[in-house]
Length: 163
Image 1 (cartoon, rainbow, N blue to C red):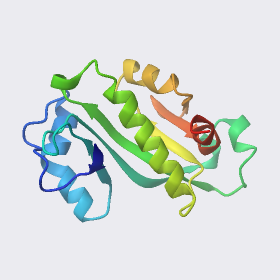
Image 2: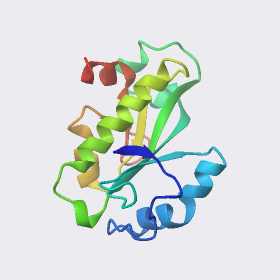
Image 3: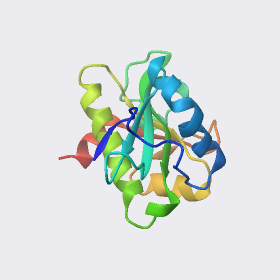
């Protein structure tokens, strides 16, 4: 089950092996949720254990950093509304079960659904390393050359994924 982070979820036991992602869930995710900065979503096998998580928030990028073939189809506003997939992590205990892909698809579906009410031209992600960047590229994410390992998936591509 994938649901928003809540008090019943055992954040302290989560470990994905990447300190910054573990620390975020342990120390900051609850505050981000409370302050409406990001919404953490968790996948649980038993409604308590966190097997993985991701966060979504609103974001904006300069039109000039979006790949030209995508940018030419957008209005010429200086800033373009997007959805930020801020973090995505799978617990070491649950690796190899395809949860990363399940979490990503859930995040993209939620982004698409919300874009129908709050505009978003696409999804932005900052991949933590080259392997993560390769993971996102498999799903059609495009590199934004101005920031290392920042990728963008146009909402039209997201729509195609769910047809």
